[in-house]
Amino acid sequence: MQDARNLIRYAGLRKDRDILQFDCALSYGLVEYLRILEMLKEYDWSPRRCIPHGGHQLSLNIAAGLGLGGNESYPGVFPPFGGFSDGYAIEDGYVRLPDIPGVGFEAKSDLIQLLRSVSGN
Image (cartoon, rainbow, N blue to C red; front, top):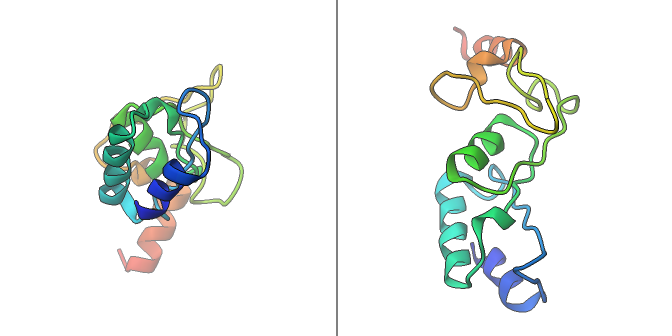
């Protein structure tokens, strides 16, 4: 959050046109991302100016759940972590979230298979 605040204070960013792309996973997860959004509110930035970087299920779910401006995604990169749940195609630049609880790992067959193999389940 401190780095994000320094960007807002000193980088000359414009809240009416600049996009903020903090990576949710590399920004210490959902709790710290929420702190960033709270700080942005203090500086009158809309959460719609936030489009998380990362291209993974966590960022996609955070963007949808918090009503952010979108999510940067690159579905064919970094398998099995990148991309979307099985059977969910990109249509007109949008993808639907799976109707399951959690982040959606279980709906990515290659990812859940890997996670189960390393966990022993």
